[in-house]
Length: 179
Picture 1 (cartoon, rainbow, N blue to C red):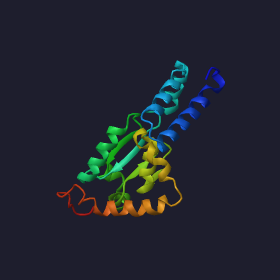
Picture 2: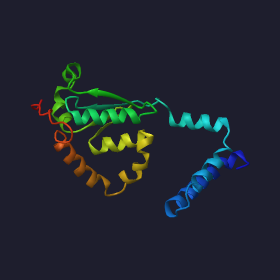
Picture 3: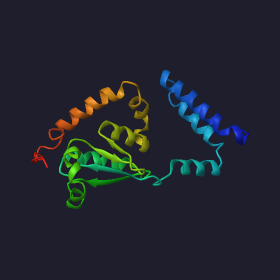
Picture 4: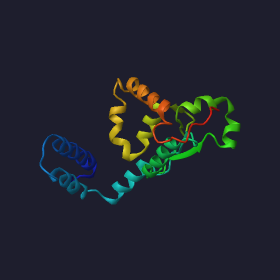
């Protein structure tokens, strides 16, 4: 902790050790206090570098959703509240100006959420949610589970079920005709 070259590594190792103890033993808040105490050794330059690494608003991604569905709108509201780093922008594919530009994709957009990354890569359905989870700190705890070898298989099935039943999951008035 006393040497700048090793400080961040030691803090990281202490945090992993303390979180391991926290997960396996019931000692109260001792581990969280232990992690907090090691953070005292951080310098302002370390904290500034951390915020630059997080890149608040640096990389913007476009979430394309169904604005006629109450369930979808609630999900977008939840994403907006978790987007503290301001990495996401949102587009309702049912808006006339968006629909005109993307007529050929409307059928596909109707069945799943899309995420267009800042390098124009398109993620759809489960993979869009997985990418969003990597962008929002509140969802970072789910990321290791979303990248397990069997996660895409089960994730796509679960996402497909939610997508098919979204009008019953909080959107009773959303029974709109297909585009």
